[in-house]
Length: 310
Image 1 (tube, rainbow, N blue to C red):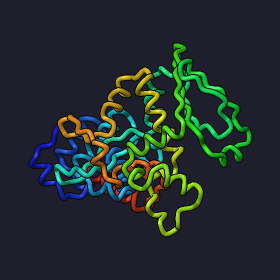
Image 2: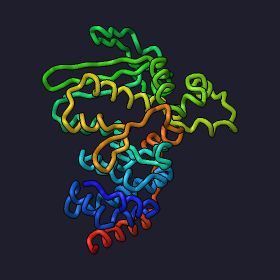
Image 3: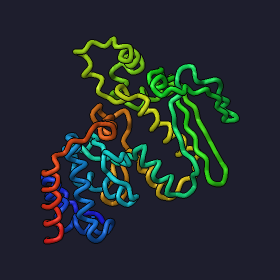
Image 4: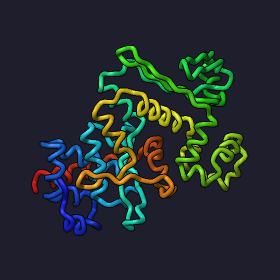
């Protein structure tokens, strides 16, 4: 399935649409996608890349490899769906940017549901005053949830709870305090750590960051800490204690990796990931996607014509 090195060199500066419609690349796509689904697949890649400027700087083969893995798992690269992402990574050894495959929160949900193993999966923020007790040995959580949605939404979060129940009756749950989640964010998000981490988040929530300095806190660990925490809880829960299908094992095994053309993977080390790469996944997941409808339609038509007439 690999594309020759000469083709990679030849297409290093080629536009993505032109690259994807070359004969050798079309053959590679068809071997995974097959039939007329090739047009849909190419259109979905182009649309995803259009919404993320940093991704446009990545090598075409790495974008294609990440997208093909998502396609093989029957997941969509659409940022609105949030199932998986193609995340830019600055590969200093190669002197270029490559796209890594990253499984999204909803991707975990989709793959878990398809396995037919899970009866229930849930993750929720625990608000101040709600937690009565949590026994990690017995996995027993006792809470008194605030009934008024508006009041609950405006109440500070103190922790996070995630659980699943399998159809065979097995269940597991975890609870993390917000302090534990903050430590996790500082360890794994360079953008969060380098801009002050927990201390800066507290000042931001209190409105004590000067407006002129707000640009420093674009990471969604600052903008939507609870949303990022929910994704982390689900990954921890399923990957450590859940029953995983072959597809789910494959997705987790290759999560946050650059997929090479021969199927091998290069894992991204957290301490080498720059701020842009560390948080672009969250930008894709939480931002509003604005694509000119006519332009998108035009691109799709051009792609379809090139794909079937070559």
